[in-house]
Length: 321
Image (cartoon, rainbow, N blue to C red):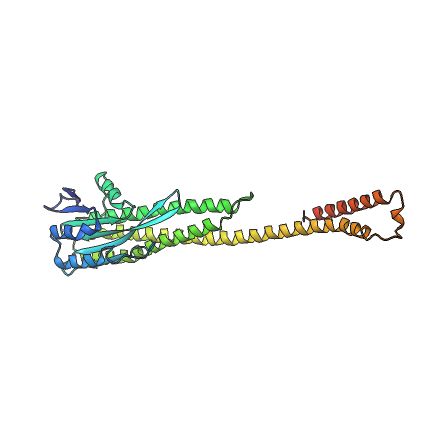
């Protein structure tokens, strides 16, 4: 468990005595850490009910975002997190739980998004903080969470562009259906994780309106909400583009099948001509004048070749071959 003391949480002065940001290594230890740092029992009871893992979700199911205020005034915020594996194009979801008291904020993260690590780097690296008091930590963490979701959106956009080039490539390639469906599934997972964030941000705005001296919190909350809405629209656009690519690919498959059928039909027609002549000669009739004619055999061969060549030229001109 790591703690950070002594940050300047307001522009006009240092941190109030005892104000801290506590990062807990495990969700299971968050309740104990909250109890040690003076969070009320009623808030802890509410926290234990909301901690991810108390009610395990189904596989690949995003953690639900939720904002609660305890009777003693503490805020408990649970939000899903997103990360992206460029090698496999997989979207991974996690969860981030925050407990915001008067002079302390405790957080724990589940998953591999590493939102808290990046938020610490921003605060210690001079990142402009858009809020006051302990709520500046919440502001930076939420903005970092949305920034990580933006990276996921960019990664999915690149993967969709690669799939588009594959579908519209003139060269024959492996069937892209599996890749298209995989991307649609990952986009759906990302949107399931982002949608709860969209619903919880207005609640944070309402909480900001109720807090005294918290006028500066509204702009960053509105910016985060607009950012999430924009990401959702981009993901929706990617999903529509994949649906269009799927339709185009199926149309291409149909066209190729028609081309194959025409080629097969053309060669069958070409083969039918010599087959007909050969079958007639194979009947072994006795009274066939050309059987005793010196030029009968070469003339029959030449006639079959001429018919086959004529049919071949005809099918080439019509585009069947």
